[in-house]
Length: 112
Image: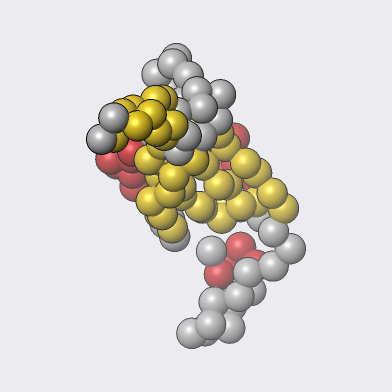
């Protein structure tokens, strides 16, 4: 099993959710976050003082998938999130050793 964590532009979330639901992906966790990457934010003036706004609103979501669906899901994320501009986001993939459904005590891929 793999955990996919992606940080994206907020406006890319709805098209991505629809594409993931169409691919029958369930168990999506979504968080609103702030951060900065290569764009480092921007400068604003507040009451005459320069303020560096170095964090931008982003959306973070997490999905745990079976190993055989990893590339399919990564392709869906990229195809529905890529604009070609700085700030499109990042995808992080990590190994999950086990998953347990609390209600039924199922383990592994059956619990996803």
